[in-house]
Length: 467
Length: 101
Image (cartoon, rainbow over all chains, first blue to last red; front, side, top):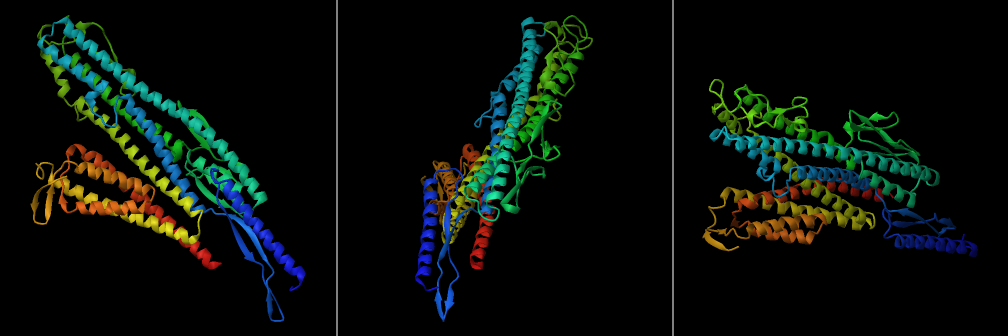
């Protein structure tokens, strides 16, 4: 062992080890701007020494390259990416709903919307009838305002339906992208299993990690590490997307006019259980938020229409005939906003007189005008219901925006932490973690103090403290 | 902000600018927490602590925006706390691995 030969061997191994280190450094420098690249480090290990006649002889050094990755942190980033992807999709869709009604982050006032303005105009026209029931132009104002109001309902309803259809298309597009990525991941799984089943696979793992992160932007995933350095991916409810070298494509199918998503080996319908990512956000808005908005709009249109119809039918028209319905619907309350129409263009059809008082009477005109202040939509007036409805849309959009901002900030924190944790020593890592902890503590303190300041400021009120 | 009256150790501060100051502090805290800027956060903590000495009155018009910003900071803090727990567990695991070697 102490021979010249062995010394040369030790020197050769040392040189080879240095070469590995140089290769790793070269790769790190060359790939510093490569998306998803993980820094490589070199682990030097002494080869067991040998003792001869009480003297210990080293037998050299070996070096191996390992990528500095941490799967726990990677998964944390992926999960946060899924949450952020979903919240971003929700914000984008809810902003479109705000646009339908002309709402903005600074204004959710009903009176500033076309629907609100036209509803007020309709009730004002009914009110004007009480003063001059036989005037043709006053009667024409009622018919025109009713048509404008029905048109607003039709337009809002069809725009909400259009948003839902565009979300259907988005689901199909997302599914296509998911399939391309799961296929890539399965191929990488197979390559990793054959080239590096027991150790870090370097660039191949980087590519797989990048593909999983991209997949996380699209859909919520559960990830299981398997034998031979493999990764199995499933949807949240367990439908398999990737298992080893095999991927299982998602498909879409139309059921009752709505796009459904099928996944897993048996093609199970996972539409109602998919969460996370752009797909989760699109499905959430399409299947939960939009139906609720559409249903409330239907309720409002149907309530106004039926209240006006009932009152008009209780009176006598300008020709002395019993009043008829002024609004029509094709399927009751279901789809009422889309189907509401004014039944006539004849101004005589408005029943201003009460039964038995002749066509010049105004009793029924007064009752029609009173509808504006009556609780005709459940326990609310029509304008009260519209105000609450628009306020709900505005606050939903605002809450979604706040949530998305928070999720984006959290993702930024995690990716910051990921880059620093995967590129430094454990000592530096501890220091980074301390920095994270101290930042959290200081921000918590700011939050607590602001909370207390605001609480006392609210209690003090605006006028008591300051002149 | 100007002091308009002194009552014992506490002062009542003119409202003008208070909303703006609180709003800026919240904005800065959100930005600094996002990039884990400890120095900036500690300086904000000091700044906001000094405001505790005063009785503040906020304008009702700006209250909603301030509450929204406070809520955002609270949400990020919540996420931060759960991530810190995970990262602490992760770090402890790495430390154990190091000792095992």
